[in-house]
Structure formats: C-alpha cells, structure tokens
Image 1 (cartoon, rainbow, N blue to C red):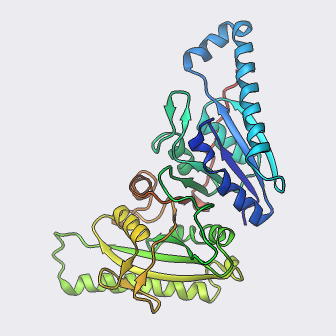
Image 2 (cartoon, helix red, strand yellow; image 1 turned 90 degrees about the vertical axis):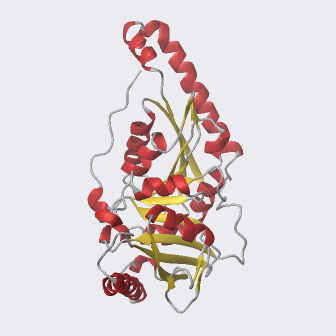
Image 3 (spheres, rainbow, N blue to C red; image 1 turned 60 degrees about the vertical axis):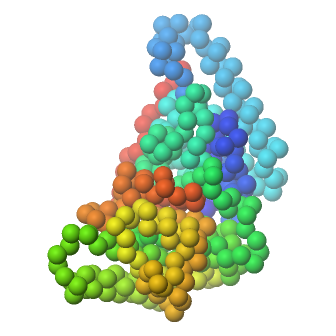
Length: 338
C-alpha cells in the first residue's frame, strides 16, 4: 500500500480537487501526505536576482511565506486530523522540484491534477504534469478536471474497476500491482476489480489473409488467458493476494490503441464488439485506467508521448501511470535557488 503520498499544488481550486482522493488513500494505508508547492519565477527575475539580491530577496521571502501559509491552511482545514500531513515550499523549476521531492521524501505515490495554474501558465499534458508522469520513479495518479471523483462518487455497493491495457511485455504488466493496491485502498472490501485488456491492431492494408489475422487474435486471447492464470496461481502480482480483488480480461480489435483504451474503459464492451474472457459476456465501464509508460515498440508501443500520452488526452477518467523499474534512472535536477 502507499505510505507516503506527495500532492503537488499550485494555489488553484483545480489542483486542490485531488485532496479528498489523497486523504482516502492515506487513511486506507495509515500513510502520510506531503503538500508540496514549487515557486517558479520568470527567467528575467532570476537573472535580476543574481545582480540585485538585496532588492529581490524580500520579494522571494514574501512569496515563500504566502505559499507556506497556504499549504498550512489547507492541512488544517481540508485534511482530517487522523493522518500525518507535512508541507514544503521550494523555489525552482516546478517539474524538477517535484521529482527531487519524490526522492528526498521517499514518496511512493504522486497524486495530482492534470490541470491547474502556475502563475499565468496552465499545468497541461505536454508541460509540468506530462513531465512528472513521464519521469517519476513512483506511480502517478492523474485526476482529470472533468472526470469522476474517485473519492466522492463511490457507493458501498458499487464495484470499482481499473482497466489495465497490456501489450504482452513484462514492462506493461508492472502496472498490475500498483493498480491493485490503489483499487483495494479505495473500494469497499470485495468490490474491487482489475480488467486486463489486450488490443489487437489489424491494419486495413494487411494482405496476410484471414488465417493469419485469426492467428494474431488467438495469440492475444491466449496471452490474456495465461496472464490471468498466472495471477490466480500467485505467479504474477502475488502481493495482491488477500486484498479481495477479482480479475477479468478481454481482447478487442481496433486501429487506434489509445482510442480503444478510452472506449472500453469509459463505456465497457459487449461480446458482439470484442472477445470477452473469463466467462462473462460484458466488460463493465471502469472508474480509472492504469498503464505503464513503456512497453513493446511497433504498433503496440506503450510510451509516454505515444499511447499513454494520447490516452491522457482522449479520456476523462483518472489515469494511474507507472514507470517500470528497469526504466528508472536519474530523473531529477538540482533546484534553482534564489
């Protein structure tokens, strides 16, 4: 379970929308929350500081104090007293500062909004949020402005399902355990479910014939079947045993992987549209999507900037982004100090 949750904030109500979700996760695990804010000043001010530190230092000090008061106020008024909460304000480029904070505070999950404000700049995919999702050494749970609120919309009788797109690679399977831990923490006991989805891309100009296409589809079905068997046998994601989760899987055909992920996750799918596994003829809509940032190349590429990045753009669901262990390296940069 997630023990040290980092929540980057920028002073906007949009960014604060993730606080109930972070709170619920911390309460479920007995963990703590770090409310974090990085103050990024315009380049021209940074240059000016180097030449006129006496004139600009008071301004920086005032802004830091205001940011600290803001975080402390949130900790006292928006978070319950039964969880441990810390606050930190730093000065520097926002994305590198967040990545450094993950390392320094030994965070194991980042919960953040995909949109907010930093001065006159928006947090948008392709900017700060994209950098964190792509480079974070720990899972990042991205809450969409227009999407469902995982912390508030769940009912005790409702099933919380996370959809996990797989491409046949071990790297893509790395999303299974964090997704299971997240669902188990949020769902009513026995009401959490993970759905494994394999998307088969059939190019329209494929001349290999019917038998070859059937072979590709059959291989995808077999992969999902074997993966589910490995989970049930404790050979894969053994740490999820005892969490009361159920597992299902399906294979679907599409020409656009990101669009297919969003379609199946948001609307579900019937047997008439896809090949449903595990004795059910319907895939229920999911409440969130969990996927790794890297997988195989070619048509099944699952990399930030490709399928993962495009999925963030086309779905309104929360997205848990996991960076596989073998892709983790030095991702942080020194903070700019004023």
